Length: 166
Image (spheres, rainbow, N blue to C red):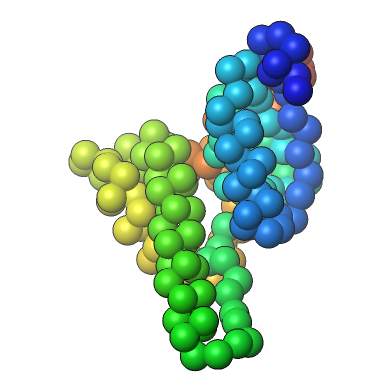
């Protein structure tokens, strides 16, 4: 709605433990396709699905005490054998989409520029898949920036106020 009214910058204030894949991807798509510049400011946490939504913004900023968490999504079906197979195939597809979204942003992260001679999305995806096999991955705001999941931390030298996000 805001994007249709004018093309003024939009700041989304987010604090979320995540949620349903389809609901989250609806939000992700709405932000990604927005013509206006969109900044997301994370308070408290960006976990699970909301860590993916964060990647849709033009500018991703975390408050100093916020944290970021990523993990393999939760699956599970209680239905017939064939439907379970179809569901497992779909879970694999959405997991690959998650890694694509993360890799597109993280390939620019300082960690990957420091540790890979030529960081590519495929190398980043490989690293992320190995890392998430250990379970939930929690990062501080500064660590999220280091890995490329966020662009900055509020009140740092670069982002002195909410208005500076616009």
